[in-house]
Image 1 (spheres, rainbow, N blue to C red):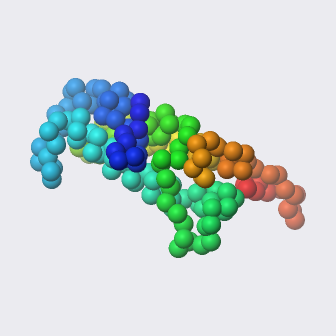
Image 2 (cartoon, one colour):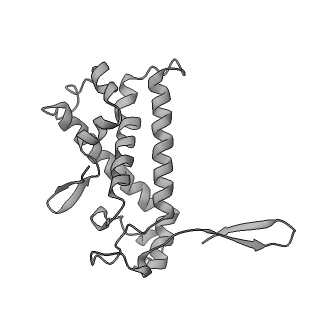
Length: 186
């Protein structure tokens, strides 16, 4: 469980072994044809790591586009002034929760790239279709948890996360005009 780092930058949150550990049966029971892809890799592990790198890029983009990221940047005082100036999420600044990012990347690879190659979408009760749904739910749970808790991100790049960089969202109950409570998340 380690990030793949090349040239001092995080390229992927997961290795091939991490993805294989999540669902070994799909690799043992099914033939996954990776030879017909552009720039065919030398091995299945190399193919999985290429997919994990692609998944990492998509996860980083998803984080950058989230409202939680913009809210965090506004609170952390990182020079964010508007939608056109939203800085990218830098995976090199992840200090803790690395195992969650690795698992989230493995779930993404399985649900978006590996299982759709072998799933029978004509049968909604197919085990592979159910696994895709399961991994989608696991990915969403991990993503929501990481977006509500930025205690893992070192915004200023000094190697530790200080109190000013942390953001944990929670709800405030506030009385509205009616008799119902309104939950406001900050």
